Length: 307
Image (cartoon, rainbow, N blue to C red; front, side):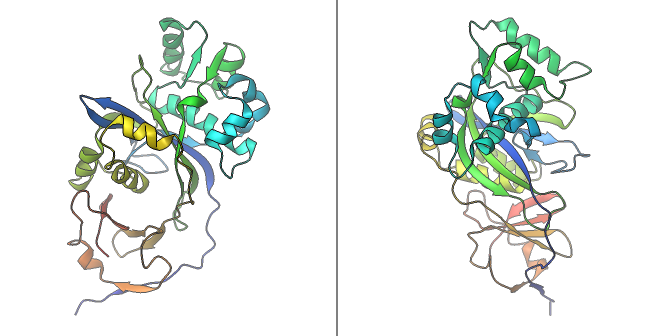
């Protein structure tokens, strides 16, 4: 008889999550919808070795809305209408600025422009990023204030609001934005926090995760699953025109003797105590594209499983 583990709610006080922003970069190649994923370095504090979307934590200067107001391509009311929804002015600017800043730092894609911009303008900023010294702490402020760039808030759209499970050692309160790849730019990993980047269709990304070639972080896996329902970029552009943040998604993490189990908020047992046989999880992986509410991590790979 196989022993089962009783899954109870943990009463330990969770760590306070840090604010963060993530950007789902989208393009269409040969009629196929693709997303850009970065492989986190093995020594990274969060999601080591996993493929994720570009993103990172919100810096203190990101929320200086009084500074940024004059350097974005929307007026404050439009910023609130398009990107807000339960966020204060400081918060919406902080998340949006962080999204643009982190996308350039990690993926080399700059969601910003200059009036009468030349190809050389962008090349100079990109060269600065890849230099031996890299970008200094306040590079984004210098870019808009001293060099006349405008942050393209109009290129950002709301997608989802994720909060890291309470038992995780590193926790983030993350806004997932979507942006469509600007023309004339290329994604180039920073080679510091990330080791390589790939463009992949949601289907191939999920298949690569199942066979262990493209190990996805848990929220990345869920996002690619969501994107399966969009067959082209026009459908996705229509979706994000009025998409709200929706309720914050706080998965439930359950440690197992080997690995972990995640229950998404829509799982029928999310709020309940229950028993599960850890050995059965190895044979309960769901096929590609099948709806799921649970993921099991084993040997660094998160895979959707039956409940």
